[in-house]
Amino acid sequence: MKRTLFVASNRLGDAVLTTGVLHYLLETEPDIPITVICGEIPKSIFEAIPGVDRVISVKKRRFSLHWPEVAIALGPVFWHRIVDFRGSLLGFLPARHRHIWRGGQDDLHKVIANAQLIGHDRPLPSRISPTQEERDATRKWLGPSEAQEQILALAPTANFYQKQWHFENYLRLAKELTAKGGILEGARVAVFGAPGEEAQAMPVVEALPVDQVIDLVGKTTPMEAAAVLSQCTLFVGNDSGLMHTAIAVGIPTVALFGIGKPAVYGPWGEKSLCLKSTPPGTPITRPAETSDAIQEEPLPFEYVLEEIDAFYRRISK
Image (cartoon, rainbow, N blue to C red):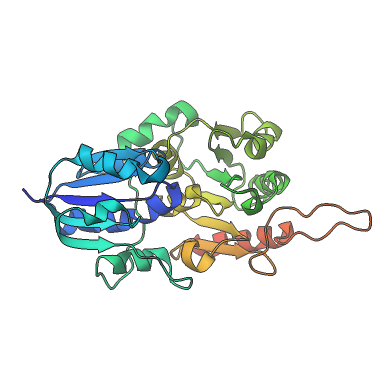
């Protein structure tokens, strides 16, 4: 029996960015079951994709000893296809077709580079499609469904502090966008964050009215977060896995970039907006106050607000 081995990243964002390739393989080779190898964090994303036969999560060990352990767990298989986005030892297992990641280019977006890895000449955008059952399960946080309900999704955290726009900016943004006359007047605000990111996310939660805020900090799996995001009206967040998840579920997405590679990891698609610090590559954290003056933020609040307002009005026409 033919089988495909698909080796994805430990990181949520990189893993989500490979879902377009995974869906393509499932659609073009529907009779070939796929085993996914990934980290523990994105595991729930892959488990929810119809057609995926098996998901094995990897915990890193010293000297890359986790790879022999995974190979033993896989058993003696001659794979029809191996797609390895990590360039791991699993790429050397017996296979008829082999696609091994050797590193990307700093000017080529991942959805293009990932597609090229399997010989496809068009971008394969990330895709996550929560089922109605998965969406219904989020009602424990969202409450009863209401027609035309608008939800602003905010992700004020990131895996590195220099990628984080100050939480006071996110709080102010939530108030401005949902105020009378704002683009999301009267909307509720869902605040996301992983366990351990409370210091950046909870000040936003705690400063918003109880009847407006939806506190999701440390409460969802990545797939549960995707199901919630699929019901949101607009996402604003830092360069993070949650930003890529918002893109993958198809909602309008605004990403705030400082350090990092927006040409490679920026939001993809017509319903996305990438706002970059000035000069590009500058951390978007708030500069420290000095005795002489307060430096202007690399990503000023008024600029972000104006750009989001114009972006949302344009795509909502």
